[in-house]
Image 1 (cartoon, rainbow, N blue to C red):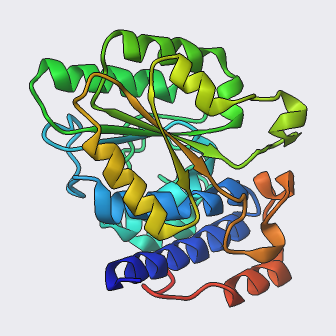
Image 2 (image 1 turned 60 degrees about the vertical axis):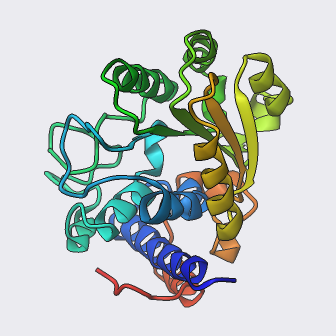
Length: 281
């Protein structure tokens, strides 16, 4: 394993520490999906994405990222802070009154890195497609990325967007689906089965890749592969297989930790499993 991958893994461990501490600090939030998506967002912001923490609202000349499943805001905020958008100390205000790091990302507080309010599931892909088309119209060669939960695919707006993008050859878009098989009410297969996602996205005309979302090396390799496939007439979707609660053993394998905060003892158990690499806020 090369040094770059090891450094990304160490950063991911710190981000996971941030997540459990943030959710514990306010005794609310969504740790499970945040922990599962940590490797992806760390790889994206620290390796793949062409972005500037100075943050221009228009995003011209930059790759853009849209978080559609906004309830996993803890991982998003931590990655933004750790990559220079704002001071990590602000993470301590998570879900507090008048904080810029609210339970779901919002825009009126002006938090750098947040381009859209999200949390009303199903909307992020439509926004990402709009941004992708804008870049094409402006001759901007940078890319657009978006992230979605698998339970979110139960929203009809996702499939309207999924039809629209291939029809309009939106080939500067890379969408990722966090396939952890869990949602707040239980396993997705019991709440509303998603069926064969690979076959569905292919049938809709997307270029489909698959990723082991908690294997940093595979995450980087698949994201690089996805970038190489842009500009060829098709939007790209990555089916990212993760474990909810990844990195904290007692949070893994169940929908229980979708939206539950750890108590004091559970926080200490979690932190004992996670390396501090960049310094706790």
